[in-house]
Image (cartoon, rainbow, N blue to C red; front, top):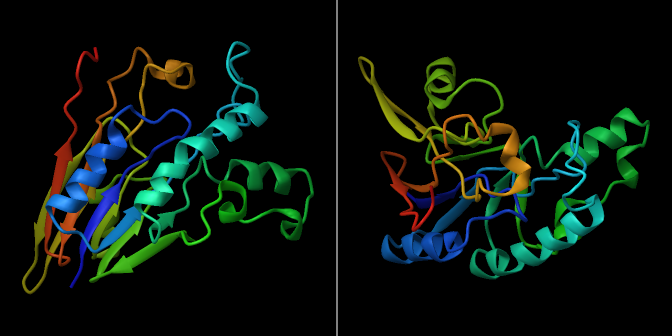
Amino acid sequence: MSKVLVIPDLHAPFIMDGFLDFCKEKKRKYRCDQVVMIGDVVDNCAASFHTSDPNGHGAGDELRLAIEQLKPWYKAFPDAKVCIGNHDRIIARKAFDGGVPSVWIKHYNDVLGTPRWEWGDSFEIDDVIYCHGDGPKAHVRAQREFKSVVQGHHHTVAYVQHFAGADKRLFAVQVGVGYDFHHYAFQYAKHHQRPFVSCAIIDGGELATIYPMKLENKV
């Protein structure tokens, strides 16, 4: 049975200052032996399908900054499992729409310099599904799959919800985010509910806990 640190949507190069140290401290304190990054590791704001901010970084500069910002994350968590998020897929989707065969597209590890990260649409550890979470929130997915589910994607909520049946108990975990919402990339949501900055730990597929990060001087 594993103790899994769940790292939420990072959206590099817009990661919250201090969030790496926060995640490292939780992994050390609770002696986690596995790490799952829940997706949207990179933001790809400049390359997105939405109108780009003309005052922001170009796609090349944004990628270079993301690669640099992720270097200490790879050093800290070299054997992480990484769920592929919708923002991570943007470049491949644009290539597909442009008629570019997948053989021309580099693997995430080759681009980001993370050779040991294991990327996948989802992972299953101790009968718990880990996925990015495009679509419904975690409690809906858990009931639909009839399995415990941990996911990200929905930035403004973080929770653990339990379900009990005649002979089985399930939980649904919606983990928050790890980015700094003050960056221009998130101004589309500046009048929305604020994102919830947190990580999660799943112990043996049975106990799930959300850990919010204390935000100093952040309003």
